[in-house]
Image (cartoon, rainbow, N blue to C red; front, side):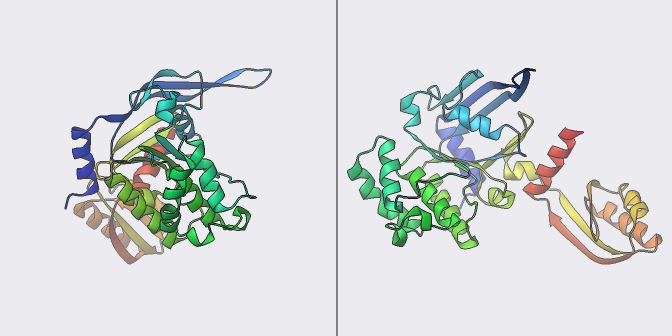
Length: 323
């Protein structure tokens, strides 16, 4: 059975582009007296194919939300080229094919979950009959059908998040933007959402995920973009970003700053941790580091070899870009 990354590569060859961005730039002007210009997007290039899960990562202020708002047709006065389904982002024919779950969304608390589904579903241009036909299965799948006729004010944060996901899917969109989709959802609920996203991807839907939970992104996304200060630092499949490098974790007794400094001679991408160090090393470098530790009188309590994670890559790229 092909892996997700292999499925995505095949899809890109066989299908047209869902979303295309070329040299996208957006500048904000701040201040009432002293007008300062802030470039939120600085020449973004992006291509996303049909039937893929695309991860959008970056620290606060990286430009992720600005990019999504441009693609949703919610921001004016940007420069460059952006097309969704081959149309400008503001084209109503494009927007009708998009689902959106914003971060920290708010549903009308005086409505029931069922009423929310009807209201938001009809706002997409679908008939009430269509919404009533689709809503039960979606709510059942996301574990909120039994609470369909409760007021939203009585929903937990996790239930509201699942209701928000259900409403974003009610019109069966071709492109789905999810901003922190598992925020406030318990582990069982997160797994259910992951499985649903994978099924939607396999059915041909394209899904954009913006999340701070990098482990979730690593598990589910076919491709990932890492942004910082309005630019794309790196993009590719998860395997391409992580590579084959292994991280060696050395847990020490008796280590100090001088020892940590000496260990920087072995391997790359060092990270000093409370009980030792973590770094990318090959076998020869790891053996030399162990000899150095012993020569300086420290004890090794644990040696652990781990494959780099997406979080490791993310932190390294952001720290390098800040230097």
